[in-house]
Each structure stands twice: as structure tokens, then as C-alpha cells.
Image (cartoon, rainbow, N blue to C red; front, side, top):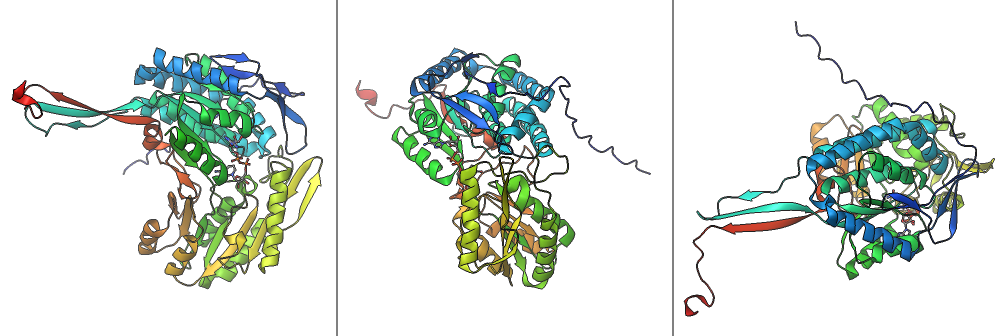
Length: 512
Ligand code: TXE
């Protein structure tokens, strides 16, 4: 009898037992050329969305600071990072992954404290991030081009993948460490040097990477981390002539702006923007599994997620029963104190986001949708909470079915045929991800082809192994991150042609 193959043991977090949550806000400089320097700009305070207390004190990097950071990156690139061996880059990335695991407690605490996500979720995101660094190391050692041996007897050609140079990386506040880990290790694996700017609301965990990477053996200047607003620091990065590529995650409006600015200097621009993702449940689906995934998809991170399953599309046969179960289960999602182990939803990141989401709830009501759950909100000890909110009787043209709300609000729509589901799903202009639950293989295959999205999940949702590329189409962005492509994104292709004789004069030729 065959013995069962042992199951993969998931990697355990190695905790730094010594980490004690700080009592006071931590003061940071900006990280340039492998050292802390004091930024020239104004002071910025990042606060805990759950209690309003200051977590980090940052210094805004001015245009002059960004100039220094870009020059430091260019010098490090030219001095040897751009031509370093894959082996060396991989070693650094693996040591960085180990460093992330060793400091997981501290990273998770700051991630929770600045973004308002539940602590348990933050811990899981740090581990997932470490895996991305591990994976990027494998890519550093397996970058290849193509060879062309069929061009003629004494003619050989090849393509080389070469790092693009200095990349400007700008990230948002919703998954700060995970998103930087979807970009930075891949840029480093490719041989790029970088200037990174996290969101001014959630900079701590990215800043902690500075010394961690130095300890992992990353040469000074390869990764510079500047903090500050988009208006001052971000703009300077977009416009700096030494940044050859812009890798941005954030709102569609700032993404469009980044592309316009990049176009002036013909920079490569890679954008991961918003979404209004359709999560489809067919009559023949495994309804228990779909229910869990629909809740996870709609309410993870209090809905502040580009991958949110913000539109739940239910086939008529199961719609009433499934919607009822979904509403009942969402009613019991624990909302509140981010340190509690059982908590699943924390506060909104800030007042602007809170008001924006509440505004959309009012819009939904005035558009004639039925508020089936939630719509309730409260300010408590400095935190701004919105309960899981579900609208039924939503029609596809309503604003709550078209626009990204970025909060714990889910719109339920119904359909009869698969064709109708595709029409609804593809009607927003966004195209980040989509999901479908069905027991019918032919429906699943059709959906995989017809749903206009960068990722289509079939009988799963929010899965994302490091091997698989991630990104969107339409208003959700351009380019891909993660996976082999995520590394190649930071590279140019160079064509090299050799002749070993047999050159036929073809221009002035024999005349000279
Ligand atoms: O994003 P911004 P915000 C969506 C979501 C949310 C809305 C607004 O709908 O409600 O965007 O969020 C930097 N030049 N997403 O205002 O402004 C900024 O400092 C250069 C979806 O926080 O796009 C931060 O580092 N940089 C998204 C980053 O851009 C600039 C995640 C994102 O901020 C800049 C976040 C400028 N002119 C929000 N202006 C997703 N894809 O998941 C701002 N920045």
C-alpha cells in the first residue's frame, strides 16, 4: 500500500521574543545611501486609526532629498548592483526574508498600528511577504534571455534581460508591507536600484526594511527609502530624470497622473490601481465554500482592498437563500479593537476614507438599493468604525455597483444566465480580478476566458501564490507584479547579434 506523502509543513514565524510594543511614537529619518539622514521637509505624524495615538514621526523628503536618493541609487546601480551575479542578489533576498521573519513581531505590530488592521491579519501578511522575498531570490538566479541559432551558418543572436536602472516605487496604505514586497524584492532580483516611498500614513514597516536590508548584505544606495506626501515627495520621484521606471500602487486618478508625468520623459510605468471586482456564485456551486470566500472577499481589511469582492453576483436559483446566509454571517463579523485575537475588521484608515464610505452608503439608499445589513457606524476612542454593510436590489448601473467604495460595503446583484453574469461583471471599466463558484467545468472555462480581469479565481478567491502574476486591465492598471513576470517588469530586453564572417556589403559596398 502506498504511504501518504507527508503534507507540507507551513513555515512558522520565528518571533523576535524581545519585541515590546513601544509606549511612544518612533522618530524616523529618511534612509539614503545606507544611513538615516534627517529630511529637510516638514514633520508628519502617522497615527493609529484605532485610537488616534501617534505611532511614527516622519520627515518629509523634499525635492533636494529625493535628488540625493536618486543619485545614490544611480551610483549604486553603476558601481555594481546592476551587474552583480544572480547568486549574490539571491543571497541578499534570502537573508532579507529571514530578517523579516526574525522581526515579524515588530513589523506586524507597526503594520497593525498604522493601518488599523487586526493584529492577527497583520502577522499573516508579514509571513506572506517573507515568502515573496524567498520567491524573488529564485528569480534572481534564473533570469534568462533567448538564443537564435537559425539565422544563418555564421550568424548567432541572443536577447539579454538587463535591469532597467533606477526604479521609483510608490505604495499605498492598505497593505503596506505586502505591497512593497510585491515590488521591491523583484526589482532587486532584477538588478535595479530603487527609491521607495510608502504612504505617509503607513511608512513604518517600509522604513524598517532599510537597516534590515543593510544587515542582509544589500550594498548602500541600492534601496533608498523616502517618506512624505505624494504632492511633494512623490511628485519629485515621478519627475526625477534618473528614475527610469515608475512602479505605483494606489488610486486610479494618481495612477493616471503618474503615467502622464512619466510620459514626458518616456519612463516605463507600471500601475496597480483600484477594482470593482465581481464575485459570481452559480446555482451549482459549493455554497458553503462560496459563502466563506464571499465574506472574506467582501470584508477583509474592512473592505479597503483593491481585490475586494465588492459586487456579489448571485444566480437566481440560489440568490435568495445565499443572500440570506451571507447577510446573517456578515452580521456576526467582529468589528473593533485590532489587538483582540478574534477581531476580523478594524477601523477605517482615516476620516476622509470614513466619510467617503458613509457617503456611498447614502448614495446607495438614494439610488433605490435596499440596505439589507449595516449602514451603521460609530466613532469610539478615536477609531472610526463602519459595520459590514450589504445592499440588495442593486442594479448594475447604480454608482454603488460601478465605483470603487473601498470600505465594508457589498452590493448584491442577481442574474439568470452566465452571459448575463459576464455582461454585469464586465460593465465597470475596472478589471483587476473576478471570481466564480460553479460545479460546471464548461462554465468555469468560459468564465476564465470571458471575465475581463487580470486574475480570475475559479472555486477560490483571494488566493495568490508567489509564482502567479498579479495586475489589472482597463482602469485597474497596466503591467504585472509578482511571479517571473514581476521580475521581468523591472528589466529591458537587449538584442545582441554576432556575425562570424559572411558579412555581405550592402550599402556603399564595393565602391569604397
Ligand atoms: O490614494 P493615493 P489615497 C483607492 C481607494 C481609495 C482612494 C484614495 O479607492 O479610497 O484610492 O486613497 C502617493 N505623485 N486606492 O488617497 O492618493 C501617496 O502618497 C506621486 C486603491 O490614499 O493614490 C501614496 O503613497 N505620488 C489602491 C500613494 O500615492 C502620489 C490603494 C497612494 O495614494 C501623488 C490605495 C502624486 N501626485 C487607494 N499623490 C489599491 N490599488 O489598492 C499621491 N501619491
